[in-house]
Image (cartoon, rainbow, N blue to C red; front, side, top):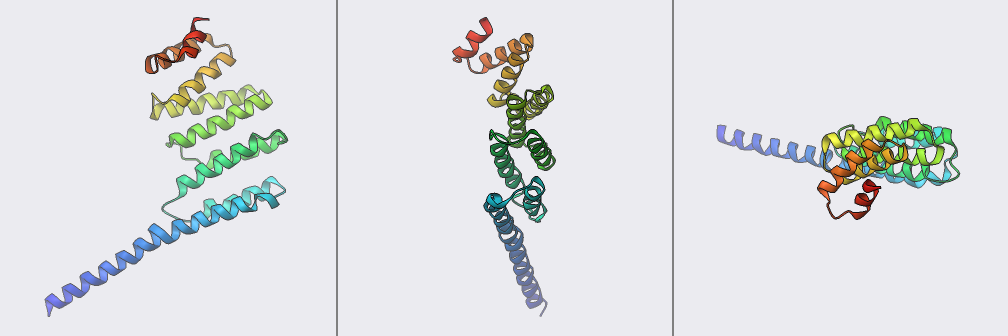
Length: 192
């Protein structure tokens, strides 16, 4: 009798774990993905920044133990594409940047690089030094997690050249050459 009870108990636990696995590993992530797809599909009908935020709030507010990282990265890429457009006013760009900045994971190199790219895009567009400083901040934060990642190194090299911080540019350029000695463009730029 005890053996039958133990067997039934194990089967019930197995069934419960299987159902929970399906809910948390498949159904909830699928729901979150659906929310993101809906948000992207709604972009054509959105007219205000508040509508855009509410649209993507549905993605970020939808609970799922899986998919949060992807949602932030894909939404950030969508916002980078919007911010990169010529007809986007600066105040809209600022609101979108602040919105996505709240949602990124501060320990995720891809998301840090994405926000650095948004700020660098804003700098090229609006020529505000605070945007360039924020891009530098995010590139540096990325280097804390991956000191040999090319994108933040090249990003910082470009920033320092653009701001006239030539010693910093040279230092970063030398690090790039150590890692990628075949990069003739950086060698030439450093020698000049």
